[in-house]
Structures are given as C-alpha cells and as structure tokens.
Length: 203
Image (cartoon, helix red, strand yellow):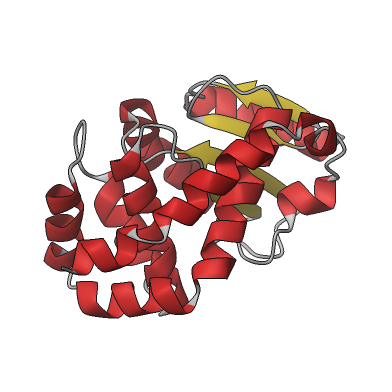
C-alpha cells in the first residue's frame, strides 16, 4: 500500500519527462547557477565549498553504486567541495520510485540515511527491495509516503529539471558529472575526480 501511495506521483514525473524531452532548445540555455545551485537538490560535503561537483545518478546503476564510496571519500578528504546529487532515474519505474522515496526522505531530514542505504544495494531493484532497504535503515515508509505526497510538486519539479539538464548536456547515461566548466560522462576513478576538482579550482 505504501509503495502505491508514493508511485502515484511518478505519473507526473513520467509525463513531464516527455515534455522536457521536446524542449532541448530551452535546456541548452541552462546557466551554471541553475545547475550548481538548485535549492531543491540534495547535497553532501561542504555547502560553502570552493568547487561544486554535480553528479547525475540512478539507484539502479551499478557503476554509480560502485563509484559512490570513492566519490564520497574524495569529497570528505578534500573538505572544500560541495557534491550536488541529481537523481536521473533512467532505468524505469523502480528507479523513479527509488528517487521519489529518497527525495521524500530528504523532506524529513533523512536524505543521507536513505541515499546511503540504496547506494549499498546490488544490481536491479524492485519496489519491495527499495522498501525493505529503507525500512532496514530505520526509515518509515509511512512517513516517506506522506512526505512525497505533501511535496509532490517540489519533487517532480526537481526530477524534471534534472532530466532537462542531463539531456541538454547530451549525457548518454549514468553516472555523469559536471565539475567547474567541464562535463565528465561516465565513471571517474579517484585520480580522475581529484584531477577534475583541481582543474576546476584553477579555473
């Protein structure tokens, strides 16, 4: 029952995805501020960091999940980087459900717990997998469902913007990064990420 209450909102997300797909000309006009400073996008690291790393990801993407500990380690070790996490749920209904659930958790101050739990999962996910992972992390699906439905416009709007931006950047899949004025489609290893941050600092 809980998953149906949440997934009802995915109809909005799916519908608006198609609209944004036809508005690439608008997407190409995106400014750095829109990409780096979306007030609704969750972030990790230093909110006042001198470099912002934007990551487009999907909770069903094995490369995203494998790379996440490395990305987190680099960001924490640096101490002066803001990591903006942009859900781009491209692997179907379960991906949208996962993104909505974690963004719902963000509304009740539980983003890092929810995101971290799903990033530790392996392979493809079902709705039941997502629910059991989140409840196993101590979260309440009742509370998440209420939060998603109370903030449906905010969450759907964020997913729409993320999709439009990823499309405008011509990203072919996840993970993909925007760091400084450069685009990095695909996985960045530890050295690659450190070097990209250093290049962004040099301008």
